[in-house]
Length: 584
Image (tube, rainbow, N blue to C red; front, side, top):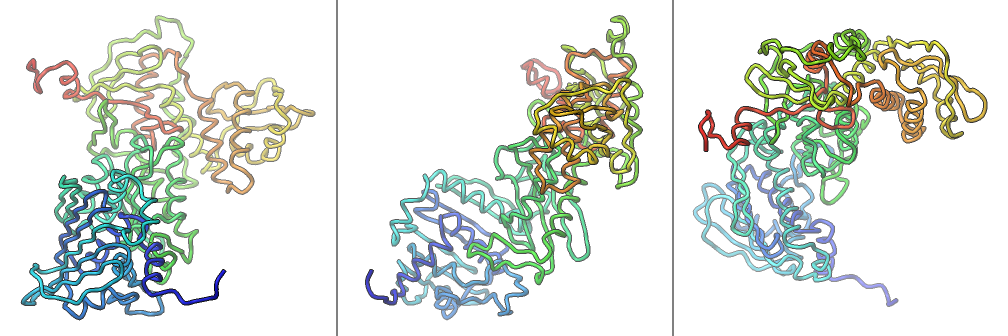
């Protein structure tokens, strides 16, 4: 190693640029944030070659004069930070690093004209070398053009992905900013191809335009000075990646781990493992209660009270997903919104909602009745107050076929649907402290691996809260004395094996409510009607009515849909008919 020496200013800037601008998406994000901070009402973004070749941002914000342009490309020069204690940061940018970092790593040209000025001025930066400010043609606002990103740092350029992948990352970043600022018009173009061109609009309209029309369930929650709002799609619309999750704190899109954890916990009852809910979540918090100066990208935060934030978000998400099965109805080709209907409010802790499985549990009738009693009978006329319609038949002893008042065909997976009803019944009973245990006529000995027995006995008190009463019975076995009444007569051995697996997976550090909810989901599967069980008319209709009034009934405990809808238009399209009945 040589003697210690001071690095050149150009090298320092290029090193710093690697922290702030790690890829084209970061550069595009920083430039759009500058436009938003400048009060822009319309922002146009155009990229070429994934943003590696070119990124151009044009806005109608306040603009900069010649002196401000010259300062804007100097490190740590900013017009946004009025409180140097870094306590109340009200703008997206504040570090004064974006433009000098881009200028150090690319060929950058700024053209700006303040409102009311006679002409525009331009300035160029190439690999950190700044040219003099010069007069230039330009409209009110600012146009920023960067070319040949990382030409001055070829080592970094080698690690960029394909232009297509980089282009997708830019689009994701711009979508997040567009959702965070719905009152600003946004247009994005990639390689001359328009991606979207959105006017200023309401948040609901912006979310529907960029995340899909199914993302319409409102999120609302307030706790002291904290508030959360936004929209979420039903769990059955979940995607394979988290690209459809937009998290915004005080107007700033973030990828904060606290919020991601809260979102995962809030949606775990309906979203299948490995899938991600589609959501636009907005958190408003006093600026002094959050630190945004954690990382140069400003996407990670530190909350003064992370538990309060996490709890509020989880509660609001769960409440948003607590509607009946018909809030958004899955169809064969997507999801169709339904008009709202009056539903029994989701119960607060301590307020029982169901009696066992309510109507359906009491109408279980005799599943082993004579075949004549199980045969489908003439269905009553569909009722407009019953969005899932009236049952007309059972298909393959697994699916219930129903017809709604508007002629829509509804196909219900009886096991998945009943699994959700059982889970919600048990959960409500647990919250009310009213879980009913059914003593077994003859206690049953269940042999299990030693590790499973140990886990079950360690949590015996917790399981008793759910109606599962067990005790040790020598090495490698437990004695089962009672099971939850809502489950009917499941196999104790299979049920306890699954419960032991669930408890082992949860681990010691998992909070009690989380453990119990996870166990309830496992129990529900064992207490549900299986595929292959025939149901009679009364049982099928009772199942449909209970689904309409049960929280999260559009999906089962594993996130799979419980029913599908085939609308008139879809049936006509499938049979090659013109809308309205003509033949195509």
